Amino acid sequence: MAREVTFDGDGCRFTLGVLRYEFADDARGAEANWLRGGVRVELSATGAFRCSVPVMLMADELSYFRDDLARVLSRQKGVATLDTEEDCVSLAVTVMPGSCSLAGYVKSEGFAVLNFEEIVTDEASLRGAHGQLVEVVREFPVRASA
Image (cartoon, rainbow, N blue to C red; front, side, top):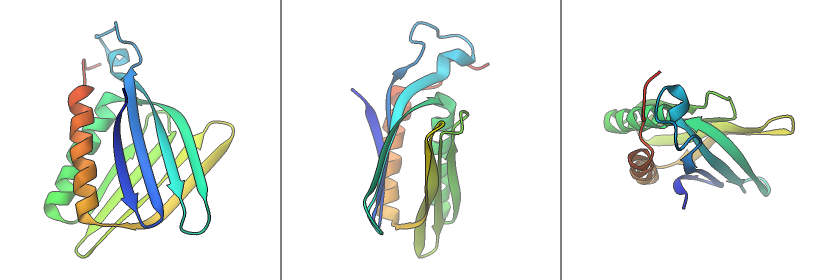
């Protein structure tokens, strides 16, 4: 069963799911931290755009993003970013006093790129997504360092 993190905004839903470690039997070196998952993006503010893309990402990318998002929410200002090593997913969460937004892209190699920017969201939604992210990182922790 996939663990998911969903970021909701006005006319946008960005969901990142993690299925499993790519190399389940290899708990040594950087290879041990590759995760297999997927991203779904639904945009409906100016039309109906949907994409679902399989992705590979690293466990440490998720743990850094979890920590970055916690810091930004605590300070109530700043930008937390998730960028994958394979450059297939990017998500930037901006928190400023009185406003929060999402921006990023999803790439399907050799096919298409779906960009989104300045998607209005709120702190309560971001805190919920952070809680989901904490659970994903708990289930898929960094297993070994390079």
